Length: 112
Image (tube, rainbow, N blue to C red; front, side, top):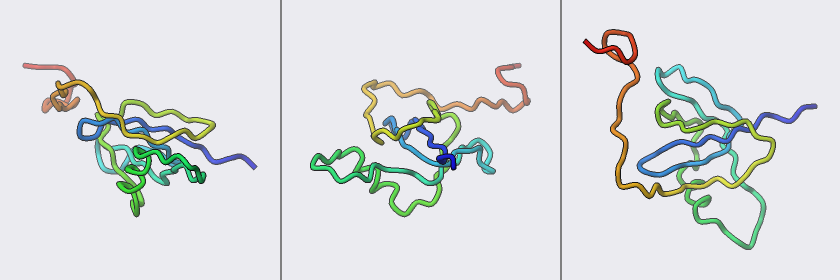
């Protein structure tokens, strides 16, 4: 029997870089979003507690599915082993200006 797929999803959220692990990732029915389901956290009992992972557990507690905007996704990897979920602060004081990759006239990047 094969093991279920595991994905590492890296995305931007409110000036932070989130790295989470999930069993299901797919394009959402909601236009412009990626759906993340069945989040997986490190369940091993350890003396050392990672505050970043505990913060993620609390933030996603009771969440059945998350919708992340496509433009916020940095990377999605299918992995063999689970690592640590974490939140990393972005050091840059300059945030990218939110922009749409879709233009009103229907062709990306074309201006009149």
